Length: 154
Ligand SMILES: [Cu+2]
Image (cartoon, rainbow, N blue to C red; front, side):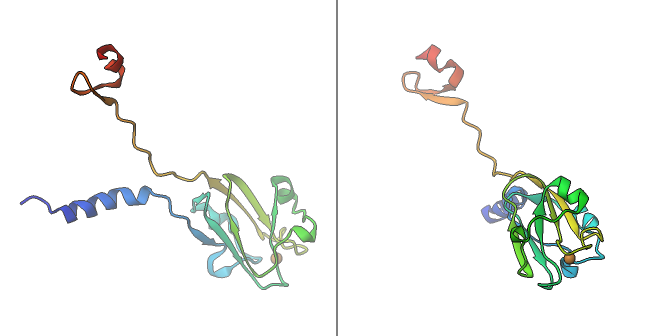
């Protein structure tokens, strides 16, 4: 008995769906949230971040905050002006560009105590575009010929 079209559809979907990029939301530190005494390097190590994904920083507003910094500031735990920080207690950051991203807490001593996160954002996986057909229908020849030969037959 031939497989039903429905089963074929399910098989095809199973093969191709995982390759379509879905924007994900990452809660930084999971249930621990954004705090001191947590290893954010280990947290990030097994995750793949892509353009379009979102980072969510959850913490007690007034006890922590979030600053996006560059690699130099990250290494030295140097906090930018307060106006550049996020401090709502639940800050979402959409990863809009690929590359390294650095985040630190701006409270005195927190970054040095390990409240710092560095991730690498991968370019978005675009759905594969179908390859252009190498064949072209030939009006005189009356059939499909390779595009390379189209002019010769024309
Ligand atoms: Cu903090």
